[in-house]
Image (cartoon, protein in one colour):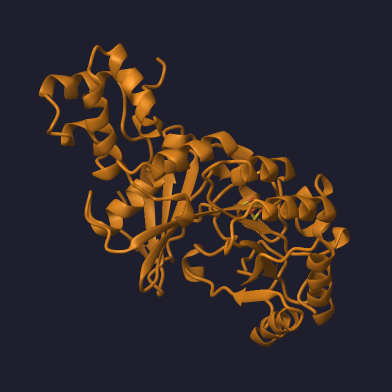
Amino acid sequence: MAARPHLTGYTRDELAAFFAELGEPRFRADQVFRGLHERRLTSFDDMTDLPKALREKLNESATTSTLTVESKYTSVDGTRRFLMRTSDGNPVEAVFIPTENRDTICFSSQSGCALNCDFCLTAKLGLLRNLTAGEIIEQIVLVLNDVYGAGGETPHGTNLVAMGEGEPFMNFKNLIKALDIMSDEKGLFIVPGRITVSTAGVVPKIHEFAALERRPNLAISLSAANDELRNKLMPINQRWPVDELLAAAKAFEKTLKRGERFTFEYVLLGEVNDSVEQAEELARLLKKHELRKVKINLIPHNPAEQLEYRPSSPEQVLRFKEVLEARGVSAYIRTPRGRDIYAACGQLAAKQEPNLVQIAGR
Ligand code: SF4
């Protein structure tokens, strides 16, 4: 039997077409869109503004929900990691990161990842499959419902980062569709300015992304300023080497509006890519490509048993930052969040361990 369509991944127009086929008027489609996104309902039965007969018809012909939360872990710093499963059994992880005035949700675009970055635990899963637009959106709905109660008001704005499992630009179409649906003012209304998509350097997609009319912010994971080291740390570099990547970044920069910037992420690995000379090399690389509207996020590596790297010392992180700043490059140190529950950058590998602090799963 074919799977029932997952309406969470439908745009408003697609929903209207679906309802037309059922012989239902457009306003019913709009009610369901609001129910799924604005009210964050995960069952047709909860949409009590629909006639009972229509709810029954919808239950037979479609679904609102395909992910199950298998377990949840809470960090000492308040970060929560959600390990979910798709209906065909693949792991999906999302992380809720609270700060004083805003919430950030880090979501997955794929189950696992094909790119094999040497410092990343997700790479160990390999690529399981691309997530659908509906599965991408459902992660956000489930996390917000868990934190604020089903459909509860969100007191802070929600920022989204596509930095969970997967390389977002390897699932470009579904990602962009999901972000479009989430930005709908009649739904979750998370506008592109509140969203950051992080790529390991899929050059053709950076050009495609740059051409989008309403697009989120961009972050490019760099982590080395020369091909020799980057080939080892991030094998995608063998396909699109540093100069080609930076040329794409420059093309993207040219499309930015006044005051906008984009980000390079640089994971700092102790005695691998964190020396003063390497910071100077990075500054020279940015200068060579005349990149000015950029900032560098320095991310201290999050260690794990299966990875051969260790984090740079705090002193070395600071020195790296100072060298960049002395050469006119804005650099920021990102504080790791949720390290103790395998929720931090590069740590998402569907870890399920009894010694992690788990709160009641569903
Ligand atoms: S760092 Fe990102 S792109 Fe690289 S393996 Fe991990 S999830 Fe994939």
